[in-house]
Length: 362
Image (cartoon, rainbow, N blue to C red; front, side, top):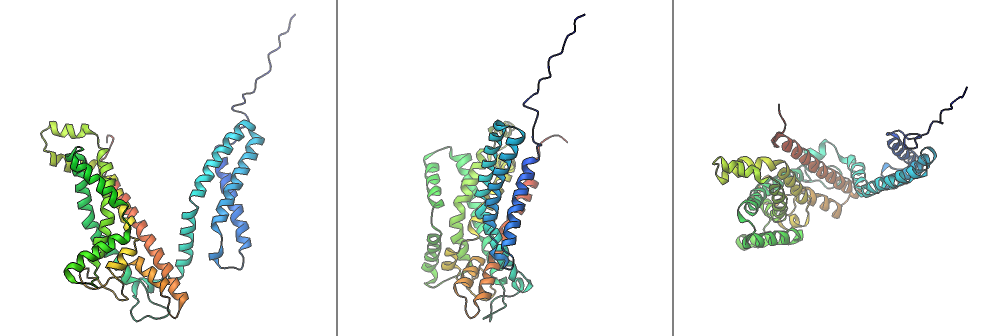
């Protein structure tokens, strides 16, 4: 009687000894927690602003690369460990690239919260010498000048991009417009301020400063950004949509209004918000054109008007009799400016989601 022996079971090296899918995330979180705890212990008894968040995040990323390499080599073998180490290095490089943003946000939030109170949003700097005061005049000035800049720049920039995409068709005039738009994109902000000041000084005399001058100076910086971003979005609209509208006898202008613009509205809105974020923090052109004042001024066409970038600069440059209070107000103004930009970007996303063309069947 012969007996047969079955061959030994073969082990699949690709499926055995494999880390769970969530293991890298837990290792990354654990590495960050360890480094943050170490730096927190070293920072005991010191102000929270002295916490070195950049070093903590950087060392946490390094610890993550080392940890996942060792664990993967032990569990999965050298070949898979090399793959995970390379992936971890790429992820760590992304984290390192975010370090300036992380440091900026952490510093502004930690320093700006000291004066982030009711008085800061309800009081101006009129008759304030030392402690106290606020930035309500700068907040209103920033919102008014930015709104005027948007009203000037968006129609001009959007109509220019419509001409370049829908009507020009690569002609000589279109190439000239594109060239000058590219040149305007690189204009220093102070030059835009000097241009607006010179234009108004010709009619009103030297020494003139108004909020509308600041809006025009910022428009010089904002228009080329709106043109380039809107142009790219309009070019992404498929030509089949235009041809379908033309086949139904729809005029060209109505096709642009009813088909092209609604299809690209999400990208155009994002581009406009990026352009607003580009100019809302400019200081040099507003120093030349809008000036600065300690009082609230809601009239764009008369008198100096304070803005948040100029307010932050003025508080830091002219600290007066109470330097600590002036610096605290400067940090609070910077935090307010960042929050305004964040709110504008969130609003842009909501608008783009509401007005973007709906896809799929209901």
